[in-house]
Image (tube, rainbow, N blue to C red; front, side):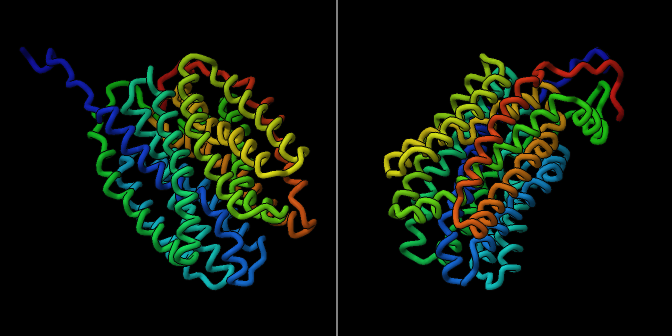
Length: 409
């Protein structure tokens, strides 16, 4: 038998169980830690004598830095593997949390809680982990697998918010951040289990990074997805950061906010898993449009109804079910249209739009509260943006892009 007749070696992959368990644990830590940052708003601003806008601006920068760094973190993960990116992200996460506790000026707080933690999250959350899932999990199970991982991030919120509240109450807000810094380092050993086998060199036409970017941004469905994701970022980060202070301003006990954030995390476990599973059977654009429409209804009813602990818990449960349920369908559509070669990078660009929305949601929340003494304007902005997201997702085409010519190497 000559060399030409030797069949190619089968492509090596990680086991799906290994990918899902380790990816889910990483997202549980990275997303779980950040979901509780709203609990620090009042203790930090009161202790440091800062305005709410100072705190909100730092977290707005965090979301913007996360979004801006996401495409580059994804590009590095696509080229060199997610393992290295996760290691660096874990170290940045721990360092950012420690420096956040030590910052005594608004500028230093923005540099640590904003820039460093934003960079850390770009390398330890969905875009990087989903790239591994897209490459290592069979396409027939991809949407479901992404739903499982997103559900893990939701469970992280449910698990970590009460833990963070307990740490703040028992040890003080600074020591609580030191403990979280130690937890962030656990991402490093988990990253070793997502170290992908070396991929064989492509035998057919390959695509360069610039060719992939030109193709994606010229494709209308990619632009519609990024617009819809902008709305998702605005809504969830505004609510996650400002809801505790909003409820306290309305005279509700601090425990109501803690329970609400935990309920968001708990019900998001079911919502993200459901969205990922439905993505295997239904048009994903219809799933996304339905999610945004239901968010508009939930927010409008919450604002108009009398505010009681029970109304808060119902709202938190409904919003929790819709919280990160946009993540599996959105990322599955990207992989379905463009393939998996640049999945992390393209997912990072879609997520950049999400984070621009996050920046505006968290910053405008603080800015408009300081200007008007109320969050009402921002609540109604969230309702209007939902309608825009419904209109943006309905025209999305989910079929694989047809490349009529060999792509650039």
